[in-house]
Length: 148
Image (cartoon, rainbow, N blue to C red; front, side, top):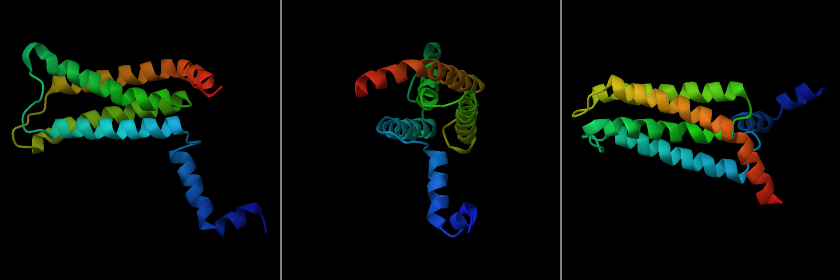
């Protein structure tokens, strides 16, 4: 019996492999970042569905809020990305989340989607992803010093 055949007979091997793809070499720092990311995502989704805007549109302050929220949402996963390919997938995913949440406002009473909000979401997602990718070496150094 070959290794491939033996693996087919054990369903747990497939589950472990799938878990390795979703959370490769999960460390406490990565798990904490994932929890933080999920909390941020929940907060952003809740605020996007809120009947009236939370931040005043005066002087376009809400655009700063959109940019900052999506930059933070993209920063954490990009910080733990292991390749440029993963960073591009993260940026694309966060951009799709921004587009989707803004488009969903068409279906909500009291909410109106905005192209400027969408642009701020996308710019924040791209800026946050880039900042997280650039900050990766610093994180590795800090984690190395912290664990030593």
